[in-house]
Length: 261
Image (cartoon, rainbow, N blue to C red; front, side):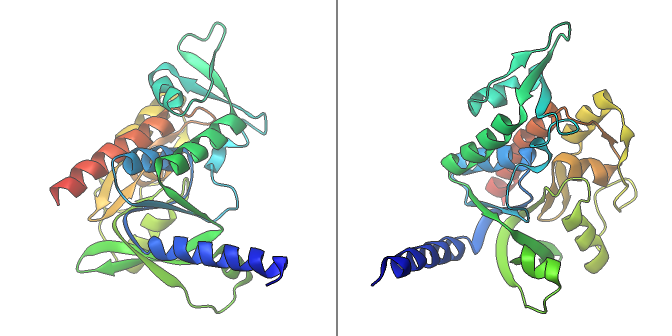
């Protein structure tokens, strides 16, 4: 066999095994931003089978670009322990008591590496185009290549079954919107629907993100900016402590629910 064929066969066989091994999951997260990566790492460490489906080539969500492409972000004191867990460095802000800067590239790369090392699987360039819905519960995801979706090719998708599905798609909250539009579900919000994100208010936005991290329909959760959008919370810009804490809260919530089911 030629070297070219050895390389090709190795890639095809290894990826096929990885995909097959993740068709039945405990937790499927859609979107690979900071809250999802923290949650995936913690859930994997607790022994759950976890996979992230990210439509971009690079997971990490909005971290990479920092603030307006200045690749630094800010994290407050109460989330530093999570950065320490992932061995991500941080630096106090002069005259900014309680705030710390973090290199955006280091943070994104560190969270991705940490989630993978904990045992979570990350699938990039894969889009989620629908949910699996059975007996009044969200049961999984309908997936396709992001390139197929962008080109509008008539290619049928595949499915992944999961005990818990997490919308971590950020501002659009795409999975929860799909559930409300196609399954006509009523969410656990004040209106029963997606309430929409409010304008920027950093202090409230950080609190809203964590407080809004919850199960919104049986089997369907939201974290990070997805949760903020679902409940009508304020946005917060390039400060990421709330995102990290949202991921930790999500892991604890799913762990408690799955152990009780």
